[in-house]
Length: 402
Image (cartoon, rainbow, N blue to C red; front, side, top):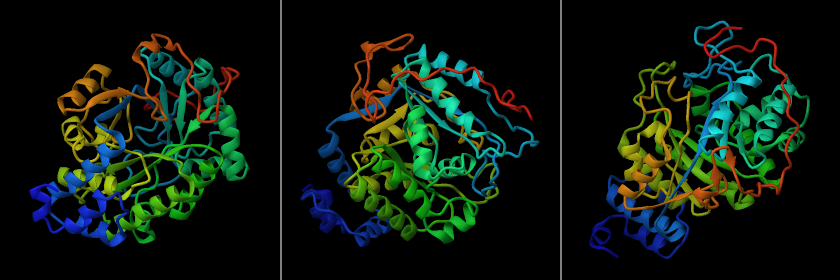
């Protein structure tokens, strides 16, 4: 034990961490109420290096936010628009295919797809979207949809949640995103996202997907009206579900951006709070292998520092993220592979390109037209899907109004 931790009031927690023992909820709350970020970071780094050594992962990916038109009006969200609002947009299928084709030429292995709960898109829109994108390259991983989108698609398609997930998987869905969790406490949700799914519904969607053999990420949104005990409760629910299913690949701390929301007077989290929360998550979530720093919302400089505070993944190239930039994020909307590698090496870590399930990829296997060697999907090999050129009534260019 180093002298820093010997002098710390957190020594008993460190002894648990050093012995690979699970910390309690009370321990987690103590970490949040402590200002000894150096000791917390040292504990997180111990767990990080025990699990992942000196490796820092990154992925070549592209985001497609297919529409910001949404039937909900969450107070914390700057992304949503009504159909006739300025800035409302929706992509038709040819537009999404074009974006995917351009990204495949850059060697991406994953497309990350989320959007608003559109009032008029039919079931076929989502199925054809997945099939057509998968048909571009059968090895392309489609990480798509939040839990609330799955519930919306269940309603649109008049199917149960398991039937909805099975149909999406057949069409090409590779894994679920972790968005929409926000903070699980019902009183907090009533303030920031009163019309969204409950915590229990979010957990149930992911539980169902995991029991089908699927994988997903987990998230927590901080820096709004939540308190420390709300964060601990949120992390506890994630840890319990992971104990049950083992289906989460990673945890991501998301930062609330107040600009352009209905909650503009809230400060959002500080860099200190982001680092501390990432470190505490690494210590507490002992059953989730990876902690991801989403550089697009926290900036690359802070993300580099986080690699010494429990983080082992900087996400990826991203390309055209909209949700946080509509909330005022000033970070770039994409980053080249070379820049990610440089940032990781500057932080003293070893960069490893990964696929969506954290399997290392040799960059030499990526051709300019996409993957040149097969990757086994989360559910085994999925053959090329039937392409379609269907377009959808009302679909228009970004920024257009239907």
